[in-house]
Length: 384
Image 1 (cartoon, rainbow, N blue to C red):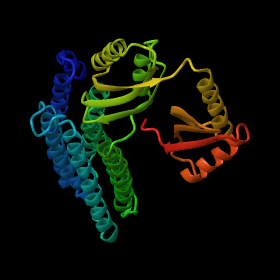
Image 2: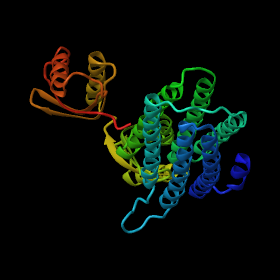
Image 3: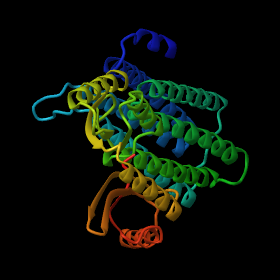
């Protein structure tokens, strides 16, 4: 079935994402309703509260599948006057709603487990019930596989949430089987409650991890190293670009990203020629990476021996101070017997020194090489 859905989704981009997300959602609704009916019947026959609670959870899972369909549909809407960057972030919000179903499952399972520990019910074993529950696990595992495959193709975080929900169901049902066997064939009647409580805690932790992942996207997380390398590779292919810095990427949903970067070029080159080169790079990034790119041109002086000397000296001093520091936007102004050197210093986020201490330290070290120099530094962090 998975291969058939992928084969049918012969369209690329947003249309493929919506098609595969709908396939996942519709399949999930059907399977979850069937599992709800199945588990409710098994729970009634065996008098197992955990299995009955698991049946109710499958009904909520069907609801999460519907949220996935609706969320993907809305996120695929084109841009409009009120939303010039599209509706892609709705996908993150709908995934957050799906994650809340996981917390509901954890709470309900934990509540029923505590009740069973206090007042353990008489559990009745049935071989047919056992077989049906094993089949339910296989179905849920297959649903997790489908959503995992579709997520790898579409990068739709809703599918990641539904996949985790399906895996949690596999764990919960497996635990219910173990508890059923222990409670039926031993005198340890509270096993159903203890195991159920352990599973509830595990599911709650997985929900927290999922929410953290989703909220990170909503808040604006750093882009992947692969994406940064792809952008840098395309820009550096043009020999006229001497260096880049201040790369910023804004994510408004899959295939809805906007980026900006500063590109260093020789101050001696014709500005119209450089403009054409930058325009060419922007179009190539848009075509290959589906990113709206804006490149700011930074002219740098390359044929002044004195400036080049102090630029090389600055690099040496910075590396001596901390090899993890980098700099850009270098400029120099001479006035009488004083030399002011200005640049922006990029430091790691985990750097413990304050900006003021770094500036003082670099000035002190630099004066060991040239006492005339005064450093005017802007300390910043990288956006990627």
